Image (cartoon, rainbow, N blue to C red; front, side, top):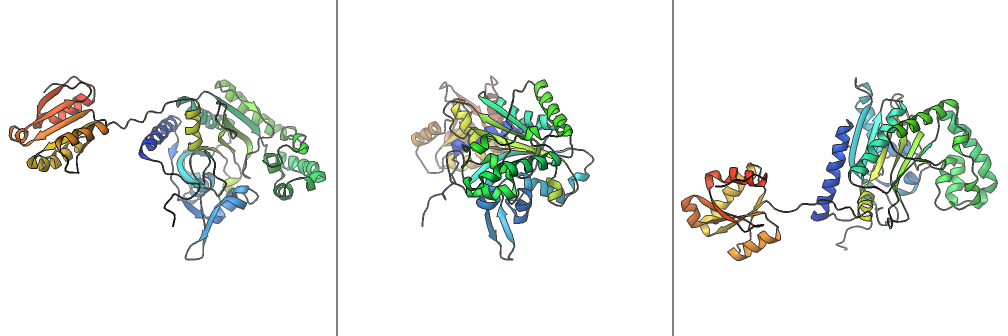
Length: 429
């Protein structure tokens, strides 16, 4: 039996977890300013949610899902992406009836995909995403893209590229679909087995194929932009105008189709151009999905969202040499000297914590010198020395480790003293 984490999964140890917490908190601050609220959905769903929501022709559904039967014989799947779950919740809880529209949601969630593990792309991955449902205003598309870019910018990333495309409305997609079928059919036998299947199921996905990307037929394939009707062109022009007004640079890529079936109109990806980041440059991607709520059994409701891989975000920060604050210094460490002091320290530590002060103590029965070494390892800002004589005098010796300064503080004033010191005040006993 292997006592290692399963292939494609990693442990996030405390020092790294502190970096994750900083990144997540920064993103939450951005979401709050954009008036997005957090939603948390189950780790697994009925398999049909993803089959209908993500699309039967996608690699996710065909190859990558972790699906199992429960004891009642029901088919369940660990979520491979976030949008379908959020839309299912949106329908189930009748959020479409909320008086405040659009409904703007964000999530942090673990996703599960059975694919070949590589740096920044694991079988259990962590994702941040947003979904905004209930408005067909292209300004909302621009806002969602702006939110994603703001998350990266506020964390310090500079080497970013935004790529956008329009997949058009249903009529535009149908016309383009037929053009793709006509274009690729003569080359059918030259395409990979996946693309031969896509030719009948969803030919747009051929443009996203990693195997056939260098095939000449992909380079000469009809562009969706040539098949957009007037309404779709006007919609896309508004999105581009709003991005320009916000000062957000972008490139239009007619071959950007995204890997999921539910997209229409706006599609986008944000990529890292940092040196040494790696061959797979995509950091985030998303788009508009005006038919997805109906596909999952809800009323006609428009929506737009994106997913952002947190592992890849951390890789991008590393590639641009951006230091993430991960303060693990301890505020106070209590050194107890003597049996009575050890007994009293239990209550004292409890009282300090109750008053908002971070503190730890020795639980190994170590000598005084060893306790001070432990305080050093924890990078404690202050060491509180409590001995039997101090208990008799109702005092605590407080040593500031940075300067070596030491003061005797009455027990009754300790909380106020430490609160002042830790807040940056110049407090004396």
